[in-house]
Length: 164
Image 1 (cartoon, rainbow, N blue to C red):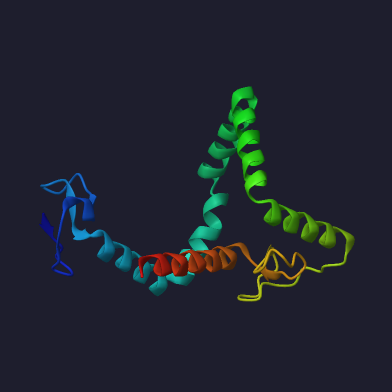
Image 2 (tube, rainbow, N blue to C red):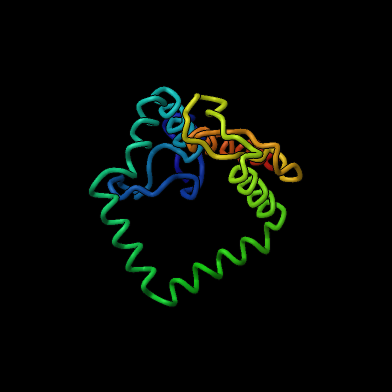
């Protein structure tokens, strides 16, 4: 058992993240407090973090390594086969989602659905977000970061429902 220095709750060691530099090998702050602090830090520094996140994939040291590693992986027939199997399994498990993606993509290609700037921040590089996959042309246009945030909030609200 260990006591969190922030919330003063006594929890088993499984309630704390591992940390090699601590005497008992675990952080002195419980997982719940650590997550809360990380979330708060992100909210307080959102613009700086978004800028960093946007530029991170373009960093030369990351981009070159990733592209080379991915090319090497795709040369391996087993890796290509595994990737194809994973994709096939996802399509089988998400028939309605896949159909909505295809219908929306075709509508954009044919000019029936026009891309708009991000509904949240105004960014012009956008993705289609389907609030309801039963309505494949009823999409919201969101940039990648806003799209991710919407899905994070949805997952969080699902998690809260499960915990209650």
